[in-house]
Image (cartoon, rainbow, N blue to C red; front, side):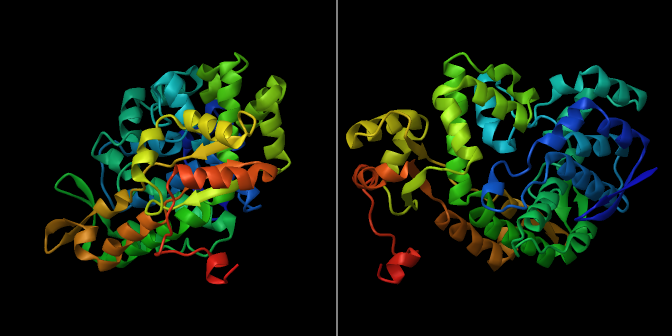
Length: 399
């Protein structure tokens, strides 16, 4: 048994299998992938990695297994360590791009588990790679420990992300919540005593979403990085099929070597000379029809807005996030020996759903010198109307 010190959970004990898996090059790559992509441009402390998060998820899973009995516990422990091994550089920033070209999400790790370094460890422990894959994707009953409405994965990243960004929204009673979790009628559920702890997790996630995960500066930098990658791929200077095996530094280097537009964008990101917001609008203040029409092809919209405003191609970027969901609301809790969803028993959780929708923002970004022209064109294009539910601070101050 080996013990490592973690700034979030304290001491984490690693058994022989965990140590062997962590020593594989596939897991060591995660040391070089930031957990929060480009959020360090907003929160300087947000330099923690997928490797640390994997350790934390493993630790919480081990804690859970101390009071929840499951068949083949070594399998779920291994799955906890390996659950993020499929992430590409800058974590979720490149995930959609990887999926577009390889049809694989970050949880589809079967090809990675076939690597001899990992395969030999799993074989020695009598664990099949297919069982790890199904657990990671949440396709098994015990896999819901890692992939369900309330799981060890999100419990770790919420407290870890709050710790490293320094925001005050990651206060979750992890110990109480973990001790309330159990299997009931083949479902991973919250016991009767875990309601308040589960509510704190959802409230934390609600505040972390606009404050950290969807902070506008992070969204701008991420959109710039995505367009740089797309341009390099289109020019044949970046192979999308190897993205999943790269780390942050490797992708930066590839984009610098690509030069041109891709090189300019990555240097802007590195020097924090980012595009600025021309439009940042809520779902209720823009035409839903226009948003849905262009959601699957934002580059076409970028070209139209650039042409109309007289801005060079590639210097108007459009960011249309998916409609927000809080899947945690559907987590089941046992009340009087019956299973009901959290939203049925908690008015706090019910109110979070609409509040979460109100946090949604779509963005149009450009260089500072083009901002005024692009703003006027974008506001007209999206038929922007005044949002009475959430005023901008400058509006409230009359500026």
